[in-house]
Length: 406
Image 1: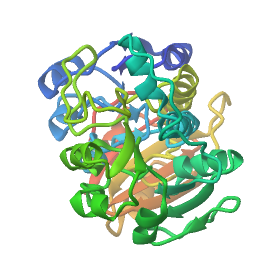
Image 2: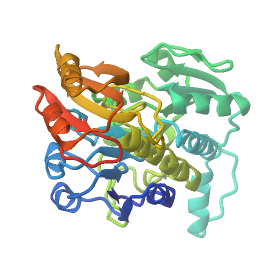
Image 3: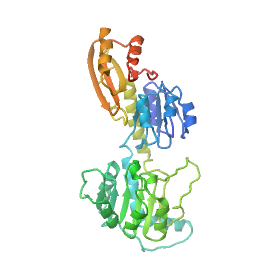
Image 4: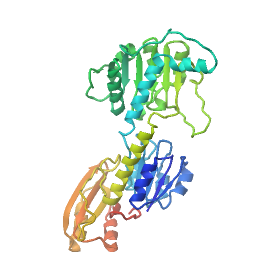
C-alpha cells in the first residue's frame, strides 16, 4: 500500500499514513502531468496541494488509485468528474487554514491603513520619513467583505473586535456575525474603506474586480485579495493604485504563480503601499499540521471502511465499521452509475451464494451511486469478479485492499 505526497505536505500526514501501514514517499515540489503519470504508478493514495493538476490522463495511469487528497481548500485543479467516473474519492479540507488566512487579512488591513509597509521599505532604503500623513486607525473604518464564508466570517469577527464597522456581500443567504450586515455589491464598493475578497474558485468569479469595479470603489480605499488570482484584473489594479484612486493593496494570489524559487513578475511590483506575498495566506505551521491530520484521517478511513463523508465528488455514505470482530461482519463497497437495478443485481449475487446482508447504505450524487454492505461472509475472488461484471459497475472494493477499477 503506497502513498505519494507532493508539494511539501506536513509530516503529520506522512506519520498518520505510516501508522496505518502505508509506505509513504514525500516530495517537496509539484509534478507536471507527464512526470506525475510516471511517478504515481502503483500508488493507492495521492496527496497534493494547490499547484499540482490531476487530469484524466493521470488517473488512467494508475488504476490502483483509491483516493486523492487536496491538502488545501481548493480542488479546482483536480478533474473531479474523471475521478468519479473511475471510482476515485477526492477529499480536501475546507476549514483548517481559515484562521490563518483571516489573521493575515486583518494584519494586512492594519499595515495598509498605517502605511507601515511603505514606511518600512523607505527605511530599508536609508530614508527616514516620520509622518502621520495618510496613516489611520482601523477603529471606526468600514470593512467590506466580499464572500462571507468560513474565512470571510472570521475576518468579520476579528475586524469588529478591532472596532471596525463590517458590511458584506455574498451570493448565498448567510447569517451575519455580530453587528455585520449584508449589503449589495455596489453599496459595498461605494462605502467601504477597505475591501477584502474571500470568494471561491468558481468560473463566475473570474475578473470579479475589473475596470468598472475599480471606478466604483470609494476614493482612497484599500483592496485585499487572499482568494484566487484570477478574481482581480492586476493591470487595472496597478493603474488605479498609480492614479491614487486606491491608496493601497495587499495581494497574496496571482493569475500565474511560479514554483518556489522561480522568477516572479507583476504589474504591482515596485508600487508603494502594495504588500505582495507568495500565496502564503494559509501557510502557517498550525494550519498545515491541522490540514495534514484532517485530510489523511479522512483518506485512511475511506480506504479502510469505505466511509465517504466529506468527499467532494462521491456520494456521502457512512456505515459504522468494526474491523476487528472475528466473525464479521465483512464489508463490501460498490460504486456504480446511477441507474435502476444495480442493488437488485448485487443482492441477487449475494443471495445466490447464501450470503446474508446484515446492513447496507446507498446514496447517489448526480450520475454516481455508492453502496456499502456489511455481510456475514468474506468476499472471495469469484464473487468479486461477478460483482464487477454487473453492467454500469465502476468499482468494487473491500476494506484495506487495493484493487484496480472494474
